Length: 65
Image 1: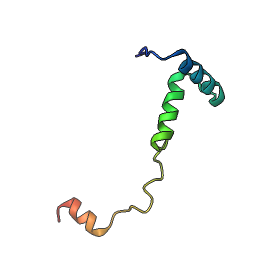
Image 2 (image 1 turned 180 degrees about the vertical axis):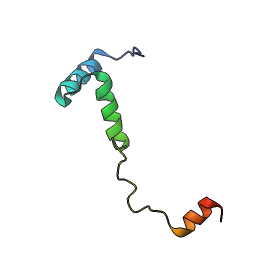
Image 3 (image 1 turned 120 degrees about the horizontal axis):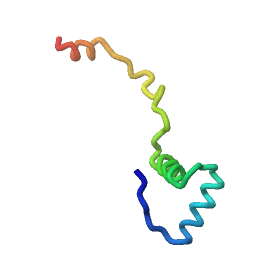
Image 4 (image 1 turned 90 degrees about the vertical axis):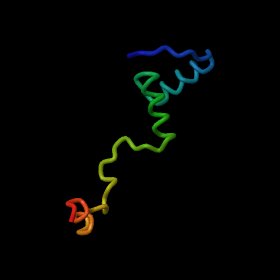
């Protein structure tokens, strides 16, 4: 669902320049990418849990032993 937001003409021009520079398909994609970079959230969490394997004690707690 699209939403309209109000920005100044200067902000619109800055967004347009950044959109072209980044090769973004839309302002939405550009804004989302900027916020993801700023927050440090990776695009994928695949492989981020390496070394966090289960231990025998963890398994026993999980099974209620």
